Amino acid sequence: MKNIALTHIHEQLGAKMVPYAGFNMPVQYEGVNAEHETVRNGVGVFDVSHMGEFFLKGENALALIQKVTTNDASKIAIGKAQYSCLPNLTGGIVDDLIVYRMAENEYLLVVNASNIEKDWNWISQFNDFGVEMTNASDQYSLFAIQGPKAAEAMQPLTNVDLTNLPFYSFEVGTFAGVDNVIISATGYTGSGGFEIYFKNEDAETIWNKVFEAGKAFDIKPIGLAARDTLRLEMGFCLYGNDIDETTSPLEAGLGWITKFDKEFTNSENLKKEKENGPKRKLIGFELLDRGIPRHGYEIVDANGNVIGHVTSGTQAPSLNKGIGLGYVTTENAKVDTDIFIRIRKNDVPAKIVKTPFYKK
Image (cartoon, rainbow, N blue to C red; front, side, top):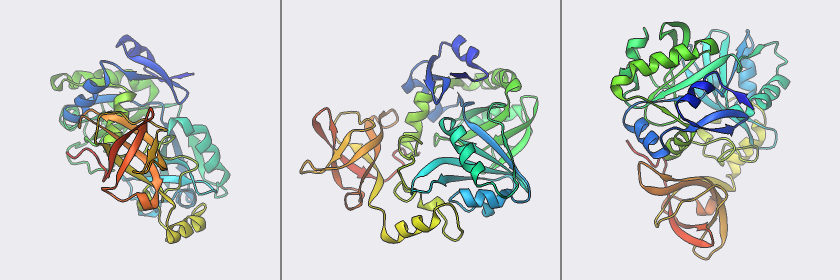
Protein backbone atom coordinates (compact mmCIF):
# COMPACT_ATOMS: atom_id res chain seq x y z
CA MET A 1 0.00 0.00 0.00
CA LYS A 2 1.31 3.46 -0.92
CA ASN A 3 1.74 6.32 1.52
CA ILE A 4 1.15 9.96 0.59
CA ALA A 5 3.80 12.56 1.51
CA LEU A 6 2.10 13.57 4.78
CA THR A 7 0.98 10.18 6.13
CA HIS A 8 3.09 10.80 9.27
CA ILE A 9 1.32 14.12 9.93
CA HIS A 10 -2.15 12.60 9.60
CA GLU A 11 -1.13 9.84 12.02
CA GLN A 12 0.20 12.45 14.49
CA LEU A 13 -3.15 14.29 14.24
CA GLY A 14 -4.92 11.08 15.27
CA ALA A 15 -6.60 10.45 11.92
CA LYS A 16 -8.23 7.09 11.38
CA MET A 17 -6.22 5.70 8.44
CA VAL A 18 -7.76 3.23 5.98
CA PRO A 19 -6.70 1.60 2.72
CA TYR A 20 -8.32 3.53 -0.15
CA ALA A 21 -7.53 3.07 -3.85
CA GLY A 22 -4.23 1.42 -2.94
CA PHE A 23 -3.20 4.26 -0.61
CA ASN A 24 -3.08 4.65 3.18
CA MET A 25 -5.52 7.57 3.59
CA PRO A 26 -7.07 9.63 6.43
CA VAL A 27 -10.79 8.80 6.51
CA GLN A 28 -11.70 10.94 9.54
CA TYR A 29 -10.25 12.99 12.41
CA GLU A 30 -12.87 14.24 14.89
CA GLY A 31 -15.89 12.67 13.17
CA VAL A 32 -17.77 12.87 9.88
CA ASN A 33 -20.58 15.22 10.94
CA ALA A 34 -18.29 17.76 12.62
CA GLU A 35 -15.89 17.73 9.66
CA HIS A 36 -18.78 18.04 7.20
CA GLU A 37 -20.12 21.13 9.01
CA THR A 38 -16.62 22.68 9.12
CA VAL A 39 -16.51 22.64 5.31
CA ARG A 40 -20.13 23.78 4.84
CA ASN A 41 -19.72 26.76 7.19
CA GLY A 42 -16.02 27.55 7.50
CA VAL A 43 -12.87 26.07 5.96
CA GLY A 44 -11.32 22.60 5.98
CA VAL A 45 -8.40 20.88 4.25
CA PHE A 46 -8.47 17.50 2.53
CA ASP A 47 -5.16 15.86 1.67
CA VAL A 48 -6.11 14.17 -1.60
CA SER A 49 -2.57 13.57 -2.81
CA HIS A 50 -3.55 10.07 -3.98
CA MET A 51 -5.11 11.58 -7.15
CA GLY A 52 -3.28 11.12 -10.45
CA GLU A 53 -1.66 13.82 -12.60
CA PHE A 54 -0.71 13.32 -16.27
CA PHE A 55 0.96 16.07 -18.30
CA LEU A 56 0.43 15.99 -22.08
CA LYS A 57 2.64 18.19 -24.29
CA GLY A 58 3.06 18.76 -27.99
CA GLU A 59 1.29 20.22 -30.99
CA ASN A 60 -1.08 17.22 -31.11
CA ALA A 61 -1.90 17.15 -27.39
CA LEU A 62 -5.37 18.58 -28.04
CA ALA A 63 -6.04 16.03 -30.81
CA LEU A 64 -5.27 13.16 -28.42
CA ILE A 65 -7.48 14.62 -25.66
CA GLN A 66 -10.31 15.16 -28.17
CA LYS A 67 -10.05 11.51 -29.21
CA VAL A 68 -10.16 9.99 -25.70
CA THR A 69 -12.58 12.35 -23.88
CA THR A 70 -16.28 13.07 -24.38
CA ASN A 71 -16.23 16.83 -23.74
CA ASP A 72 -14.99 19.40 -26.27
CA ALA A 73 -11.49 20.25 -25.08
CA SER A 74 -11.02 22.76 -27.93
CA LYS A 75 -13.21 25.12 -25.88
CA ILE A 76 -10.73 25.25 -22.95
CA ALA A 77 -8.80 28.53 -22.80
CA ILE A 78 -5.38 28.70 -21.14
CA GLY A 79 -6.00 29.04 -17.39
CA LYS A 80 -9.30 27.15 -17.54
CA ALA A 81 -10.31 23.61 -16.58
CA GLN A 82 -13.03 21.27 -17.85
CA TYR A 83 -14.83 18.28 -16.38
CA SER A 84 -14.91 15.32 -18.76
CA CYS A 85 -14.79 11.53 -18.96
CA LEU A 86 -12.95 8.78 -20.82
CA PRO A 87 -15.46 6.53 -22.62
CA ASN A 88 -14.62 2.86 -23.18
CA LEU A 89 -15.48 0.82 -26.29
CA THR A 90 -18.55 -0.88 -24.79
CA GLY A 91 -20.64 2.15 -23.79
CA GLY A 92 -19.21 2.61 -20.28
CA ILE A 93 -16.75 4.97 -18.60
CA VAL A 94 -13.04 4.29 -18.04
CA ASP A 95 -12.86 7.26 -15.62
CA ASP A 96 -14.03 10.81 -15.04
CA LEU A 97 -11.37 13.51 -14.92
CA ILE A 98 -10.54 17.21 -15.03
CA VAL A 99 -8.61 18.62 -18.01
CA TYR A 100 -6.50 21.76 -17.35
CA ARG A 101 -5.04 23.79 -20.22
CA MET A 102 -1.65 24.90 -18.89
CA ALA A 103 -0.26 26.52 -22.06
CA GLU A 104 -0.80 26.60 -25.82
CA ASN A 105 0.13 22.93 -26.33
CA GLU A 106 0.26 21.66 -22.76
CA TYR A 107 -2.48 20.04 -20.67
CA LEU A 108 -2.80 18.49 -17.22
CA LEU A 109 -5.24 15.59 -16.73
CA VAL A 110 -6.27 14.89 -13.13
CA VAL A 111 -7.63 11.35 -12.72
CA ASN A 112 -8.96 9.18 -9.90
CA ALA A 113 -6.42 7.44 -7.69
CA SER A 114 -7.89 3.97 -8.22
CA ASN A 115 -7.57 4.36 -12.00
CA ILE A 116 -4.09 5.88 -12.45
CA GLU A 117 -2.51 2.86 -14.13
CA LYS A 118 -5.67 1.93 -16.06
CA ASP A 119 -6.13 5.49 -17.38
CA TRP A 120 -2.45 5.82 -18.31
CA ASN A 121 -2.56 2.60 -20.34
CA TRP A 122 -5.90 3.55 -21.89
CA ILE A 123 -4.79 6.99 -23.11
CA SER A 124 -1.35 5.69 -24.18
CA GLN A 125 -2.87 3.14 -26.57
CA PHE A 126 -4.48 6.00 -28.56
CA ASN A 127 -1.32 8.12 -28.62
CA ASP A 128 -0.33 7.72 -32.25
CA PHE A 129 -0.02 11.54 -32.34
CA GLY A 130 3.52 11.72 -30.92
CA VAL A 131 2.29 13.50 -27.78
CA GLU A 132 4.82 13.67 -24.94
CA MET A 133 3.08 12.09 -21.94
CA THR A 134 4.36 12.29 -18.36
CA ASN A 135 2.79 10.46 -15.43
CA ALA A 136 3.69 12.81 -12.55
CA SER A 137 1.29 11.21 -10.04
CA ASP A 138 4.06 10.08 -7.68
CA GLN A 139 5.73 13.52 -7.67
CA TYR A 140 2.69 15.67 -6.90
CA SER A 141 0.62 16.35 -3.80
CA LEU A 142 -2.86 17.89 -3.78
CA PHE A 143 -4.74 19.72 -1.03
CA ALA A 144 -8.41 20.65 -1.38
CA ILE A 145 -8.95 23.75 0.79
CA GLN A 146 -12.73 23.94 0.84
CA GLY A 147 -15.48 26.05 2.40
CA PRO A 148 -16.96 29.57 2.24
CA LYS A 149 -14.07 31.04 4.25
CA ALA A 150 -11.31 29.44 2.13
CA ALA A 151 -10.49 32.52 0.00
CA GLU A 152 -10.31 34.92 2.94
CA ALA A 153 -8.26 32.52 5.04
CA MET A 154 -5.74 31.68 2.31
CA GLN A 155 -5.35 35.10 0.62
CA PRO A 156 -2.34 36.14 2.78
CA LEU A 157 -0.42 33.12 1.44
CA THR A 158 -0.56 33.96 -2.27
CA ASN A 159 -0.18 36.65 -4.92
CA VAL A 160 -3.16 35.15 -6.81
CA ASP A 161 -6.47 37.00 -6.27
CA LEU A 162 -8.47 34.12 -4.79
CA THR A 163 -11.75 36.00 -4.41
CA ASN A 164 -11.97 36.77 -8.13
CA LEU A 165 -10.73 33.44 -9.49
CA PRO A 166 -13.73 32.13 -11.47
CA PHE A 167 -15.03 28.58 -10.95
CA TYR A 168 -13.05 26.06 -13.01
CA SER A 169 -10.23 28.58 -13.57
CA PHE A 170 -6.69 28.33 -12.25
CA GLU A 171 -3.44 30.24 -11.97
CA VAL A 172 0.11 29.10 -11.43
CA GLY A 173 1.65 31.26 -8.73
CA THR A 174 3.41 31.51 -5.39
CA PHE A 175 1.59 29.92 -2.46
CA ALA A 176 2.96 29.73 1.11
CA GLY A 177 6.34 30.87 -0.22
CA VAL A 178 6.49 28.04 -2.76
CA ASP A 179 6.69 28.86 -6.49
CA ASN A 180 4.85 27.12 -9.35
CA VAL A 181 1.83 26.02 -7.32
CA ILE A 182 -1.28 25.35 -9.42
CA ILE A 183 -4.14 27.13 -7.62
CA SER A 184 -7.46 25.94 -9.01
CA ALA A 185 -11.01 27.11 -8.19
CA THR A 186 -12.31 23.56 -8.25
CA GLY A 187 -13.49 21.09 -5.64
CA TYR A 188 -15.88 18.30 -4.82
CA THR A 189 -17.87 19.79 -1.95
CA GLY A 190 -20.21 22.45 -3.34
CA SER A 191 -19.04 24.92 -0.68
CA GLY A 192 -16.41 26.81 -2.68
CA GLY A 193 -12.68 26.84 -2.20
CA PHE A 194 -9.56 25.71 -4.04
CA GLU A 195 -7.43 22.76 -4.97
CA ILE A 196 -3.67 23.30 -4.97
CA TYR A 197 -1.11 21.10 -6.75
CA PHE A 198 2.59 21.14 -5.86
CA LYS A 199 5.64 18.89 -5.57
CA ASN A 200 5.76 16.38 -2.69
CA GLU A 201 8.84 17.96 -1.15
CA ASP A 202 6.85 21.16 -0.44
CA ALA A 203 3.89 19.38 1.17
CA GLU A 204 4.85 19.80 4.81
CA THR A 205 5.80 23.47 4.43
CA ILE A 206 2.53 24.27 2.68
CA TRP A 207 0.42 22.22 5.13
CA ASN A 208 1.91 24.03 8.14
CA LYS A 209 1.47 27.49 6.60
CA VAL A 210 -2.12 26.72 5.55
CA PHE A 211 -3.02 25.80 9.13
CA GLU A 212 -1.18 28.85 10.50
CA ALA A 213 -3.05 31.19 8.13
CA GLY A 214 -6.37 29.45 8.82
CA LYS A 215 -6.07 29.45 12.63
CA ALA A 216 -8.27 32.54 13.02
CA PHE A 217 -10.91 30.81 10.87
CA ASP A 218 -10.89 27.59 12.91
CA ILE A 219 -9.48 25.61 9.97
CA LYS A 220 -9.46 21.84 10.41
CA PRO A 221 -8.16 18.75 8.59
CA ILE A 222 -10.98 16.81 6.90
CA GLY A 223 -11.06 13.12 5.98
CA LEU A 224 -12.41 11.17 3.04
CA ALA A 225 -15.62 10.19 4.85
CA ALA A 226 -16.80 13.82 5.01
CA ARG A 227 -15.64 14.33 1.43
CA ASP A 228 -18.12 11.59 0.50
CA THR A 229 -21.08 13.08 2.41
CA LEU A 230 -20.33 16.55 1.00
CA ARG A 231 -20.14 15.37 -2.61
CA LEU A 232 -23.26 13.25 -2.21
CA GLU A 233 -25.29 16.21 -0.93
CA MET A 234 -24.32 17.91 -4.21
CA GLY A 235 -25.30 14.87 -6.30
CA PHE A 236 -21.75 14.52 -7.68
CA CYS A 237 -20.83 11.10 -9.11
CA LEU A 238 -18.13 8.97 -7.49
CA TYR A 239 -16.24 6.64 -9.81
CA GLY A 240 -16.66 3.02 -8.75
CA ASN A 241 -20.06 3.76 -7.19
CA ASP A 242 -22.22 5.88 -9.50
CA ILE A 243 -20.21 5.54 -12.70
CA ASP A 244 -17.98 2.73 -13.93
CA GLU A 245 -17.11 0.60 -16.95
CA THR A 246 -20.77 -0.53 -17.24
CA THR A 247 -22.54 2.86 -16.99
CA SER A 248 -22.82 5.18 -19.97
CA PRO A 249 -22.35 8.94 -19.60
CA LEU A 250 -25.93 9.39 -20.88
CA GLU A 251 -27.39 7.05 -18.24
CA ALA A 252 -25.36 8.88 -15.59
CA GLY A 253 -26.79 12.30 -16.50
CA LEU A 254 -23.47 13.35 -18.04
CA GLY A 255 -24.95 14.24 -21.43
CA TRP A 256 -23.76 17.81 -20.74
CA ILE A 257 -20.11 16.66 -21.03
CA THR A 258 -20.78 14.40 -24.04
CA LYS A 259 -20.37 16.47 -27.23
CA PHE A 260 -21.30 14.86 -30.52
CA ASP A 261 -20.01 17.69 -32.74
CA LYS A 262 -16.63 15.88 -32.64
CA GLU A 263 -15.56 12.25 -32.98
CA PHE A 264 -14.25 10.45 -29.92
CA THR A 265 -13.86 6.87 -28.67
CA ASN A 266 -17.15 5.01 -29.20
CA SER A 267 -18.98 8.25 -30.10
CA GLU A 268 -21.05 6.54 -32.83
CA ASN A 269 -22.58 4.05 -30.39
CA LEU A 270 -23.17 6.69 -27.71
CA LYS A 271 -24.86 8.87 -30.36
CA LYS A 272 -27.24 6.01 -31.15
CA GLU A 273 -27.94 5.58 -27.45
CA LYS A 274 -28.82 9.28 -27.23
CA GLU A 275 -31.17 8.99 -30.21
CA ASN A 276 -32.93 5.91 -28.81
CA GLY A 277 -32.81 7.12 -25.20
CA PRO A 278 -30.99 5.23 -22.43
CA LYS A 279 -32.85 2.30 -20.82
CA ARG A 280 -32.02 3.43 -17.29
CA LYS A 281 -31.10 6.68 -15.60
CA LEU A 282 -29.20 7.83 -12.53
CA ILE A 283 -31.61 9.54 -10.14
CA GLY A 284 -31.40 11.31 -6.80
CA PHE A 285 -33.80 10.34 -4.02
CA GLU A 286 -34.71 11.34 -0.47
CA LEU A 287 -36.10 8.93 2.10
CA LEU A 288 -39.49 9.94 3.52
CA ASP A 289 -39.03 7.79 6.64
CA ARG A 290 -36.03 7.08 8.82
CA GLY A 291 -33.30 4.89 7.38
CA ILE A 292 -29.91 5.04 5.68
CA PRO A 293 -29.69 3.88 2.07
CA ARG A 294 -26.47 2.06 1.14
CA HIS A 295 -24.69 1.06 -2.05
CA GLY A 296 -26.27 -2.05 -3.58
CA TYR A 297 -29.71 -1.77 -1.91
CA GLU A 298 -32.62 -2.54 -4.22
CA ILE A 299 -34.99 0.20 -5.41
CA VAL A 300 -38.57 -1.07 -5.84
CA ASP A 301 -41.91 0.33 -7.01
CA ALA A 302 -45.21 0.36 -5.07
CA ASN A 303 -45.88 -3.26 -6.15
CA GLY A 304 -42.52 -4.48 -4.86
CA ASN A 305 -41.00 -4.88 -8.34
CA VAL A 306 -37.26 -4.22 -8.43
CA ILE A 307 -36.69 -1.25 -10.75
CA GLY A 308 -33.07 -0.47 -9.91
CA HIS A 309 -30.40 -0.23 -7.22
CA VAL A 310 -28.71 2.34 -4.99
CA THR A 311 -25.18 3.38 -6.02
CA SER A 312 -24.45 5.87 -3.20
CA GLY A 313 -26.34 6.66 -0.01
CA THR A 314 -25.91 8.34 3.36
CA GLN A 315 -27.57 10.20 6.20
CA ALA A 316 -26.99 13.76 4.94
CA PRO A 317 -25.50 15.84 7.78
CA SER A 318 -26.70 19.20 6.36
CA LEU A 319 -30.24 17.92 5.71
CA ASN A 320 -30.70 15.38 8.51
CA LYS A 321 -32.31 12.83 6.20
CA GLY A 322 -31.37 9.78 4.16
CA ILE A 323 -30.39 10.62 0.56
CA GLY A 324 -28.90 8.66 -2.29
CA LEU A 325 -28.19 8.15 -5.97
CA GLY A 326 -29.21 5.09 -7.94
CA TYR A 327 -30.09 3.74 -11.35
CA VAL A 328 -33.72 2.99 -12.20
CA THR A 329 -35.49 2.08 -15.44
CA THR A 330 -36.15 5.21 -17.52
CA GLU A 331 -39.94 4.95 -17.21
CA ASN A 332 -39.55 5.16 -13.41
CA ALA A 333 -37.03 8.02 -13.41
CA LYS A 334 -39.26 11.11 -13.34
CA VAL A 335 -38.80 13.66 -10.53
CA ASP A 336 -41.47 13.32 -7.78
CA THR A 337 -41.99 9.60 -8.52
CA ASP A 338 -42.65 7.62 -5.34
CA ILE A 339 -40.21 4.73 -4.89
CA PHE A 340 -39.10 2.45 -2.06
CA ILE A 341 -35.61 1.53 -0.87
CA ARG A 342 -35.34 -2.05 0.37
CA ILE A 343 -33.40 -1.75 3.63
CA ARG A 344 -32.99 -5.13 5.37
CA LYS A 345 -36.28 -6.52 3.97
CA ASN A 346 -38.19 -3.31 4.81
CA ASP A 347 -39.39 -1.19 1.89
CA VAL A 348 -38.78 2.38 3.08
CA PRO A 349 -40.70 5.06 1.15
CA ALA A 350 -38.68 7.60 -0.83
CA LYS A 351 -39.18 10.19 -3.54
CA ILE A 352 -37.13 10.99 -6.65
CA VAL A 353 -35.83 14.57 -6.38
CA LYS A 354 -33.71 16.95 -8.42
CA THR A 355 -30.07 17.22 -7.40
CA PRO A 356 -28.27 18.92 -5.76
CA PHE A 357 -29.92 17.81 -2.53
CA TYR A 358 -28.16 20.61 -0.65
CA LYS A 359 -29.11 24.13 -1.75
CA LYS A 360 -26.96 26.94 -0.38
